[in-house]
Image 1 (spheres, helix red, strand yellow):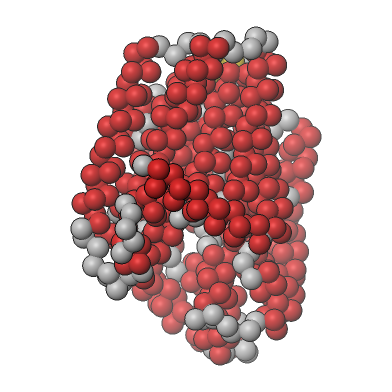
Image 2 (image 1 turned 180 degrees about the horizontal axis):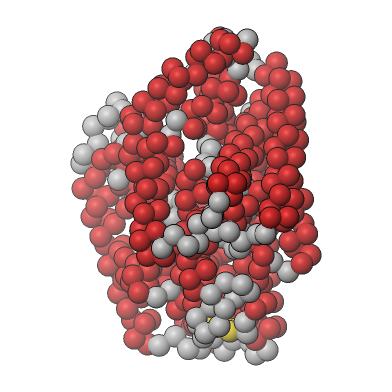
Length: 267
Length: 262
């Protein structure tokens, strides 16, 4: 599993992943439709903020927040936990183990390869947002755009690594689909996907700061909508990438132990 | 008729016996359900931490809607979801043959094939939410309100079931439909809020196209004694209509079934 070999295989893995996304385009489209929850939450919070702003959010800020949430979710999606569960149960993980590329790397590329197709939905929503709200809300300097890139990449990595960790646990408990449900509970409440995290009462946001969820959606959204000053932004980015490093260590260790338990049964 | 009651009894018994084998699942399931319900209240707490009422609903009243949502989610996950996911699998593999060969109505058989009795924990959670809500409101519901709420709840369950039959019927046409069920759950999630918070297109969508309002908002209004007769009548009409349509669609879809996975 040398680095050179992995790098050489990457373009092919991308092509395979993209072809897969095209083949199952109807399925991908339904998945994307099921991520429209930010629009429901936008309607709800707009009703709440109809008379006076809610925290720092007036109607315009709310609309921008939830549109950004929708866009970030499209770019940071991962479904590796379901996939690993399925392949462990069916025994098809065997073919992945035979290949000279780390299986987690292959899952990661698979997720990233779906992004071009997701652009079909992301593009029009982004352009519509620009047409309606102008460009003044966007990051204003190259450094901030770089920060946005780092935040989105970090958010995706956290999402993917949690997925991979849950998937690894499927090798211990036959099916970890219930753990996915448990993870989603935390995600929906703490990630900023349904509620802006700065509306939380202080005790809850203190809890949210040490959990990974906040760095998956809320941070990239805050960078995109320029919600933080420089100092706060670098502190949060540092925490996010600390979380990435921690999850990377835990997940890789977990996977390499778990995979020894693989029995290649099923069929 | 009595044959179907007996059949239902046997199907239920088989499900209970099956679930009793996986007691560890119960603990995880119960933990997840209670956590879900607890966290489902968080957005409500945050919104009502900022405002004393939203779109005409106070905290206690909105909590009633959440209570009905929790209850219906229990019904969905415990009685409707497991059976109908099995149908999708049957259609994909072509094993629906074995169901169709049995001398009873196929829709009845597939709908009662599998229950997850542990999900009944949601009834307890909903009861806790209701008691909190009424302590907050300060006055217990009237007998008439309770009766009307029970009737609306029955209608809600029927609507939920009919919508599910419609979703599953789609599996005869598009085969791979498991993510349609996921889509359904994510739309149903909007039912945790009183329908009056939605405006414009979303309101039309949630009252007419996917009648979420009739599922959780109307029962809550009935409990509060402010469900208008007009809305009650519309909900009943919609319930009967959906039940009939879903049955017709099911029968029609069944005729498209080609067996042996297709």
